Length: 215
Length: 246
Ligand code: HEM
Ligand code: SF4
Ligand code: FES
Image 1 (cartoon, rainbow over the protein chains, first blue to last red):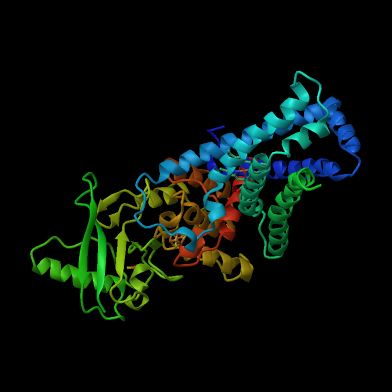
Image 2 (cartoon, rainbow over the protein chains, first blue to last red; image 1 turned 45 degrees about the vertical axis):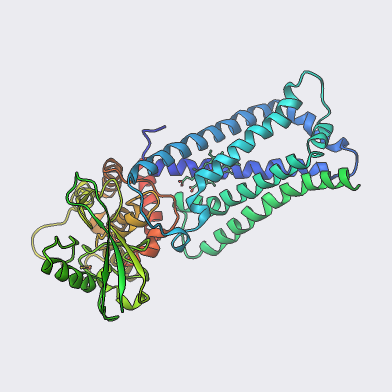
């Protein structure tokens, strides 16, 4: 992938980033079954469907590829950027000329990657490959009974929010989609997405923790 | 007013440099930053010291040679200005002002505050030529160009090649500069024939020279003395995709 020019690298980053955003929406809609007050019956049904359906299996591979491409290109670009300024400034502009989110995409991205590994270990691995059969709903419930885990989860979504705060609008620019008439719409979409999606994800662990502690 | 300057001094390209501190007294707030440096250099010369090397030519914001990184800002604080247009009234009396050269792999420091920006020339060169018919000048309006297009091309053409966009970019990317040049010709019929090779070659040279990629932070647009817009970078992206998937 390194022989792609930086413009094409960013083009693929933007496409893979937007693809991962669509995955965030799909994944969230499934998670919201957890909030259905039926002791997890609906969620278990959904989770079983997800781990047995053939099409879901294929989609999973495409998704994993999407992550790999996005991460590898992100690392290649970060390395190129690092080499482009061998001597740092004594005084840097900081937030005066650009946003924190836009300058630290590699850092927020790396944190999301760390979260992803932990997350796959707790849920995906346990549900799919655990040695004892697990009821999906019980796995989720058990994980979110730990306040430490819930706090880690909330921090991760906060960080993901910062990744998306720059990422969503930036990807349109990378794809060359820019026009005075489109600008307000891209800003509304980006402005809602980075905030609403992580917030909605955060409600779920809080819901479980609340019922565990005080319910 | 009085100011204290911390200035990067470096005898030559391959010798290590460092900051030196120079107090400057009785500065008029109406002086430009370069005039203030002239005053300092006068006193340095009189006391037998090496004056500070910095570049300037037009001193009216059109030649693009006077780039200095002042207190963390390309061309100092303020929008739409070059260092020669920066006035000392922007600073407080007694303030310490840190002055550094542009920092980028593709802009090596030659001496003190002077950097070699010939990598920009090589990006331009790699863009190649524009075909035009020879012979008599065209009659007016035989090659119609919409006013809005002409204006946008002109906006792009106001780039003075100062390098502030590179200097301020966290990736030391020359994307705004390259996009201004690509965009200017992409908007006009005269540049159409070579448009696809031009964009591919210029981006290739930009990377070979050691500039970074564009993270869309928008810092370049803020620091550009000619306020070249990110719109041109979006156009470069479109031109590049057209050329790749033609
Ligand atoms: C759900 C997970 C993720 C989503 C939805 C996402 C989304 C995005 C989007 C939309 C962009 C903007 C692309 C552009 O500017 O054209 C982006 C950029 C970026 N992402 Fe991600 N990302 C995710 C995970 C990651 C991970 C795990 C990493 C790395 C370890 C990462 C590293 C980066 C970097 C470094 C950039 C900025 C590239 C640059 O312009 O310099 N991302 N991401
Ligand atoms: S785009 Fe602006 S900042 Fe960059 S070289 Fe041209 S005039 Fe200078
Ligand atoms: S000296 Fe020419 S732009 Fe400043």
